[in-house]
Length: 284
Image (cartoon, rainbow, N blue to C red; front, side, top):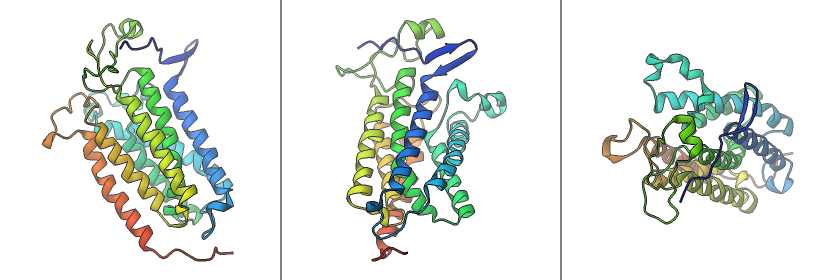
């Protein structure tokens, strides 16, 4: 199946290029922000505990989260996937527009931002984490769709009828060649958009609105952490390993190594939250 003639640049305004990838970040943050505020304002979700933050505090946290995503995502990519540029071309670290963002780095950044914001505002970081976790799949969905449009992070070769040759005239004209080659590959970006985005969002939607698990500290955050890690590890089997990281120990990929601790951390959060007695009456 041929790769569509996508152009990563949506609009070119002189020297300013508006890219699909940037719009994916903007859409994920804005929609996630409004979804979090809607949850805070929904009294049916807080039968046993008051919301962990006010809508105004959620508004303030968005700036913290945005900076954490950008800085953590970029530094994570450099440290986990391309550490060589630290001494070969350190200025490239700042060139976010050239691509290279790590989910795991961004997650660490947001976790640190939640801790700092919670300490400053005297709110419960685990309960803030529950709100944040419930909205993250929105950003993951848009991000993976942008990865597909960019023709990056493609999958391993496949003979499945839905395999895609990640090469088109735009890629040939821009790069002079097709990095993914001429063989059909798994559209792993779309697999990730489906599992990490749609399926994970629906499971967490059930947890927050159906099972009312926002009344248990850290459980929703733990569910997100475990399920994301499980989905990521499973999809790493059809995703092409990053260049230079194809032969890591035990046959695992960097994404797998970074996701394994998430299962342990998320499992601990779920165990802790379910073990902790839930209040029977909401505090005044």
